[in-house]
Length: 193
Image (tube, rainbow, N blue to C red; front, side, top):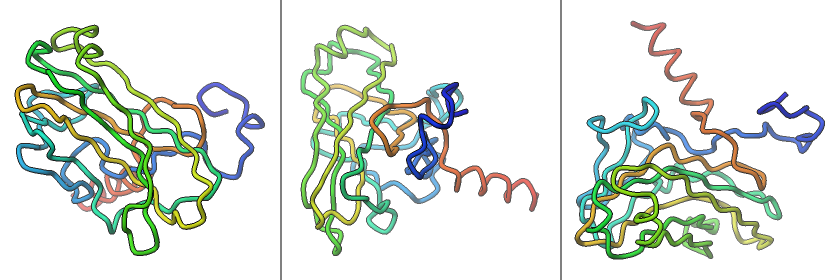
């Protein structure tokens, strides 16, 4: 069973719900590239995990380092899900964005699916309220060798927090889980302590 659904429904050759993004609990393991005014923080957490604070960052971005891009399988749907929050929605006057981005063999950008998170979405949630954003995209372009994600607040006045990003194969967002590599690293850390 996967997420309470019999395995036969997920008989697609991969582990359903596997997070392709390492360090999605934002422990600072070198997976993410932080733009100016963007930082990991444990001062505010979401479900016991660190978050990323995007403080009036404007067009600055949170991206995966190029050497960490997951491999893309042509024709396979990928779903991105994550949680977002603003402590003062009235100050959030520009749309935020996230994207599923494709890269060629040289890791150069080669197409994207952008998700806009409007100020009204933040206002509807309210000050300090986390809400989930999901999007699914499929690329049939054989030049797309890697798939990756990124985030931008686009606001020069508001603060946005991002938590528990998950990129997974398939067209359904499942509950957040760390990447298997993160679990393995945590076990190895405990063994050496």
